[in-house]
Amino acid sequence: MLRLGDDRLVLGHRLSEWCGHGPILEEDIALANIALDLIGQANLYLKLAGETEGNGRSEDTLAYFRDAVEYRNVQIVELPNGDYAFTIARQFLFDVFSFHVLEQLQGSAHRELAGIAGKGFKEVRYHVRHSSEWLVRLGDGTDESHARAQKAVNDLWRFTGEMFEADDIDREIVSAGIGADVGAIKPKWDGVVKDVLGRATLDVPSDTFMMTGGRKGRHTEYLGHMLSEMQIVARSYPGAEW
Image 1 (cartoon, one colour):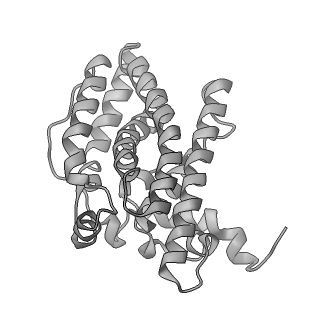
Image 2 (image 1 turned 90 degrees about the vertical axis):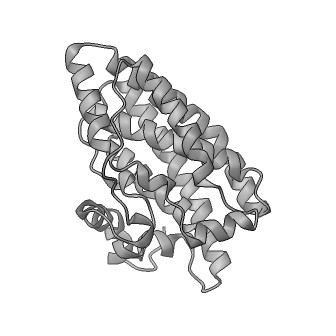
């Protein structure tokens, strides 16, 4: 639950940084709405994580009073936004992963988790459509947009393997019928990604060295900077209400 919440909280915050800076007004609004969807999903997962843990930590405590080493998100979601092609490529690669994870979780033996996944699945279907259509538009657009989209995919590729790593926690919750089997999701992800990249006239990078460690608290230098901005109000005025 913490991993599900952290992925979406960090990516939602990254997308929110585009608010007021989108390439066109319609896209500015679309990215802000997707960011709100992700943060809304994160709120539900972190609330459930805190209740399950039973140590009195709320969703706000988990979001605003943990350091980077305590976060369990994959590293791809914490990378700086870069140019618009980079943001769209990252969003697409994660959206396809999220789509298949939530699709599986709807059948989870954990009723509350299944319910949250069902709500999020309706949203992520739109997210996949949005990011895939934009990636095709950029890749199959001008020489400049094609080059930027290809560079984005190439730069991001080494961060994709981490999404499909399964450790003892994953294996335990899968065997209990609670969690998603990320290993089984990989072939589905490969199929969708190759299809969309093909329509975008973009090359699929060859599998190479893959980054790892986010699920264990090892992050890029960028997460700490992002959290310092995201958490500053809550940490400066702990307990404040409005």
